[in-house]
Image 1 (cartoon, rainbow, N blue to C red):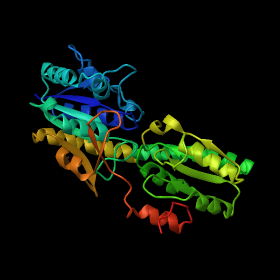
Image 2 (image 1 turned 90 degrees about the horizontal axis):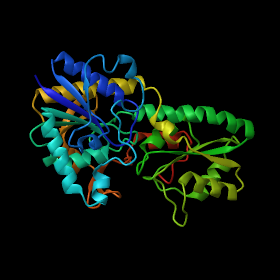
Image 3 (image 1 turned 60 degrees about the vertical axis):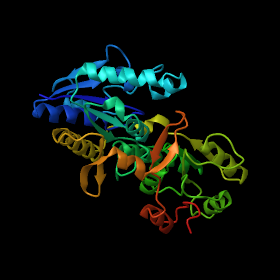
Image 4 (image 1 turned 135 degrees about the vertical axis):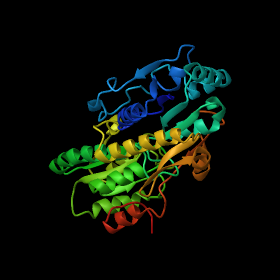
Length: 359
């Protein structure tokens, strides 16, 4: 009988509980024992690792739709790669995680994380020596190379659309523009997809240069005196500091455009998991269990076209844009950005949405 562990790391998002519940279900069908690691790497950085022993009754099916993680993703003061690096304890930290994994006697570990967590897994492969390591990509930023979708992304897009659906009513009532800032870190996938889905008047993302004078003219020429401008948190403007939405809001105010900045903040990580995210989570859970059945290791589940398959962590890491992590010295992270060939950019232009200087 195989013994597998499940761990969620990095920021939370909708879909994590769906993955966990489906992994428990699929592993139980196979006759395997399943444990969950509490609070990510912090749970392994202990002589007595923090774990939950799972069975079919531990996580009822009604919990699968909920956002957040049943296992937790960390807490204030939690020990992780970032804090260990900052305190010059990374060697000791890695050793303790390896010892904890050996103590648990796992045949396989399923690590559910974003591009930072997956890059860390690739760069610290020795920690997981002796077991199968299978990663599942989750992030609302959708910045992970080699997969067309990440778990949590579609629910986050829906959350932003819901937010804008309500906000536009106030905008119309007060003849006012709203500058809404989305998450997304250094990439614009979240803002771009949510903006197209809602019908924003302008979408500003890090990958596409934009001109604030052209943005102002675009708004002034609008057939309405209200609307929504979506701004990705990763954009920057030379000579300005502060939150991007606040910066754009001040520029619009100076140009005589009545507006307010607004922030959906962490509600983007919440919300009942959408059907598409649940299907993706279930498919990737099944793929991960099949990979363990086949004795695969150092792999990531990926959606490529209509197929769910595994790709090597090595390929994942080297297929993206490799940059230094700002929080962990010397650590490199692999990013996926909005492609200049993304069809949504052309669609935005065709629909009269200001998307930046794409032509």
